Structure formats: structure tokens, C-alpha cells
Amino acid sequence: MQTSHLHRDSVVSFSHNAPAHSACPSVHAAPPAAAAPAPAAAMTPADVEQQQQQARAAAGGRKVVDEVSGWLRVLDDGSVDRTWTGPPEALPLMQPVAPYAEPRDGHTLHDLPGEPNLRVYLPEVAAGGEGGARLPVILQLHGGGFCISHPSWLMYHHFYARLACAVPAVVVAVELPLAPEQRLPAHIDTGVAALRRLRSIALSEDGGGPAAALLRGAADVSRVFLIGDSSGGNLVHLVAAHAGQGDGSQWAPLRVAGGIPIHPGFVRAARSRSELETKAASVFFTLDMLDKFLAYALPEGATKDHPFTCPMGPLAPPLASVPLPPMLVSVAEDDLIRDTNLEYCDALRAAGKEVEVLVNRGMSHSFYLNKYAVDMDPATGERTRELIDAIKSFISRH
Image (cartoon, rainbow, N blue to C red; front, side, top):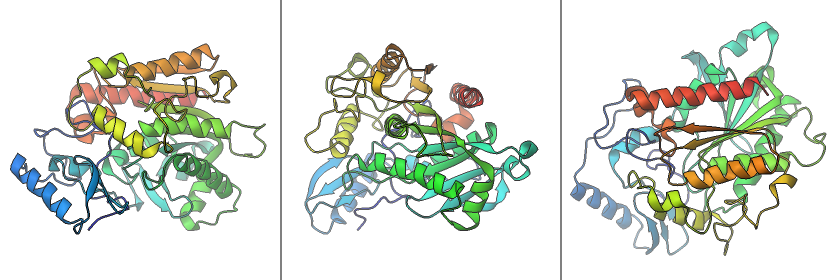
């Protein structure tokens, strides 16, 4: 029985769709490259239903009190079963990638266990140090509706390894807690703790072993950029606001220089026009899933108008009073939550904040995480290049 904790080899993030322009492969996706795990053979609806029944049986007779089909089941004893019971074609993107100290494709990959656990992508240029210069830091806060996902998954690895080399920058991915076992603000607290740990490593207060020493030698912590997809985009705003309080001396030498929310999970209790009129591309991102994951993650009794999911709403502090760094917000044109993403951008501008907006034309939620679509679909590949170029430009100017 798999309960309580995330099972990296058998689950998938809520923020990823199934068609070519989304983050999970469709039933007809072409096979992955040889270096990636091969997808399982296609299953019939009867096979999937049998797999789901087996997952329920594995609960040991405990009653399923709530379920997000394919994603997770909440049992009557409060435990959570995250066995993936949806289409097996999605599984390869959820395979964990092991760290490696020998360079691959221009970078090395290191894990830093601790509070919180960190994963570090170190471009080879850091070893030689361009003229001895240190590299900016990109701190990744992963998506998954606050309920599922893990930074070791292939879907994240392929994008952030590429981004680290393209900028170049040291990418540090944060392992976040999961709801409903840990509701918000636990995820925010972990994001802030990650910044504190970066500062401690820079000041040699956190030993961390060889990996920490490599990070310390390569990273310019005075230029930290927060980045996150979907619910991780919410965390970019919330963690940046926390780090911006005071005069910054408590964080020195660390400084948050910018935020990059990608398709952030900003919504309202009332449906937006895009939620009502945009057809869900697949079962991998639906309004029902959005509603249930946020119900699991928000504080008990809160609605989606809570500041954690609606920072531009009346329950949130006025944005003019929120200390935010410059922001680059990426909005997918075909996203169910496109309209509230754009509303957030408009609210930042109205509050006098520095904000740039990149609209991903013809793309859906977290499209760039689908490695196979990025590799094989020309439109997805081009939009992903545009996203990486925009991030590189934004970081170079801040």
C-alpha cells in the first residue's frame, strides 16, 4: 500500500495536460528518446479500470472518502494514496532522475539533503568561471497544485537542466511539502527556508559537503531569481513578498532580484471567462481537479479568494504595499486560468510594480514540461525556446 508520501515513480503533477501542446504526452505521443525511460504499452479502458480497482483494493479495506481520478485518493483514516492510476503514457515524465557528478549535456546534478532538501544544476561554465565571475541563482518552486509532484521528475529535469546551461545560472530546485497532509502556508515556509539555507551555504554556515562547496563557489546569491510553474508561480509571489520585508539587511548577502511565475495558479472563487469558455484539453487539467487540489491545500474554510490564490483580490493586502522584485509572468494563451493570470499582471501594473508579460501563443498550461512535445512538435519547441530566451533576457537585465 502506498500512502501518505509522494511516490515519484507512480504519480503525475496536476498542472500538466495531455495533448502535444501540454505537459503530459497524449495516447498517441511518439516514443521518447533512448536516454529517457520508455513509455508503457497502451492500455484499454478496461485495463485502466482494473488498475484503479487494484489501487483501491490496496488500501487494505479502508474507505476512499474523496478521489481525484488518476491522481490521489484520500482514505477514511486521513492517509493519502498517490498511486498513479491514469493513462500509463504519462508515467515516463514522472520518472525520477538520479544525480550525477560527471558532466552531461554541459552540467552536473547534485542533491543537498537538509531542511529543505535541494537539488542543484551546475553548468560546466561555473567550474571555469567566466573570468572568475559567479553565476546568478534560479530557485525553482515546483507546481502540482500544492498536492503532488517532485523536483526530481524528468518533466522538470529536462527543462531546468537546459535553462541552467542557457542562461547560464545555478538552478536550485526545492522539495516542497504536500497537501492535504501539510496545507498552506507550509509550502511558503519551505520556500523561505530554502532562501535561508542558500544564505547559510554562502556564508559557510551550512556544511553540506562537496555539493554545498560547489554551490558556494559558483553562486552569486546577490542575484537570486524565484521561478515556479502553476502553484509554484503562486509561491514565487508569496515567497518574494516575504523576502522583501524590511531593509534587506537580514538577508545579506542574499538578495531576491526577480520573480518568474509561469502560468501561476491565481484564481477567484467565481469562474473567470476563460475557465467557463476554454475547453479542457484533457483529463490532466480540469476545473474539477483545480477545485479539489486547492480545497486540499488552502487553510481550512478558505475559498479561492484567499490571498494565497488571489493576491489581486479584496482579501489580499493592496499590491502597492507588497514588496515585490521585478517580475516576468508567463501566461499560456489556451490556459483555463489565462484570464486570472492576466488580471494579476494588470493588477501589478496598476500598483506600480515592474512587470513583463510573455504570452505563450497557442499553448496550454505548463506545455514546456512535456519533453516529448518539446522535442518533436515544432510549435511547442519554438514556444519553449521563446520562454527560455525571455527568462535569459530578464535575468541579464536584473
